[in-house]
Amino acid sequence: MPMTLERPPSGDALATAHAPAARLRQTMTGVRLSFSWFGLRRTLTPGQKSQAAEALAASGDVLAASKKLLDTKHPAFQAVSAIRNRATSYWKALSLPFPEPGLRLIRQADVEEFHHRLTEFATELSSAVDELERCYPELRAAAAARLGQLYHPGDYPSSLRDEFALTWEFPAVEPPEYLRRLSPELYRRECERVTLQFNDAVALAEQAFCEEFGNLVTHLAERLAGDAEGPPKVFRDSAVTNLRGFFERFRTLNVGSNEELETLVDQAQQLLRGVAPQELRANTSLRDRIRAQLDGVQASLETLLIDRPRRNIVRRPR
Image (cartoon, rainbow, N blue to C red; front, side, top):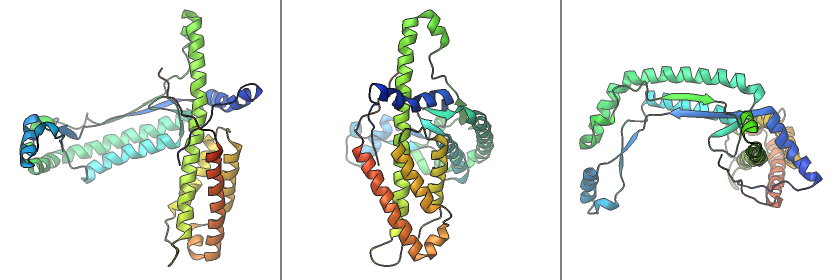
């Protein structure tokens, strides 16, 4: 459910509209998560592409091809990838988007917890890579058998231990104080740029909340509705628990920029309060009532998105 948002109005309303941005600026800080990862694909050499093209009666210069060096479905490799996915999901769940690539905003109160959890992820990753290293000869042998003439020992490092890493940092998003002394005018322009970035961050946060909320409500409503004919659809507990997880995250990270959205989230939360997934599966009347009311929330949310004037969030270079 994509959307873009308008810039705040001018005049007295401008200060009110900027209040959420000011709160973000006062209570949050930048956080970046980075990975070093072994590159699994290599482009075929011109000679190899020519051979492949010849078999297809095609010209080698129009063929783009690569080879996969290792079996990513191997349990040891999947364990390594799973840690990256979990760390990324945790980072995103605890933070808000920011109009600078790779950077998000985290509450200052959560920095210590985040650092502790990422340290645990890094330890888990190190252990998983050790296990992958143990399986590395097996994986290389399987790759040699699978790739045939495409196998080249030079594509493979002697060890995988230095090929995977997880790092995180908390880069400053405010203009450096020394700039005020060196160039007051440049410092002023940088302050204006950061102010615009935080205004955009509010819009990005609202957009992300609306999209996630809309997707979760739509999914649950569809599962509750079932098919026009036949029995109701079976749905997993996650259709409910994911929505409850959103409620908690919204209350924690909400920037207070959209009262209508807050009202709709309140309505959905009240609908599901005390309702267990098994009750929705077993109680048809409860299921129908919840579905009908979720449809109303969904319709109001769609109206909210349509009625909002549209604008694009511009990611400004530093």
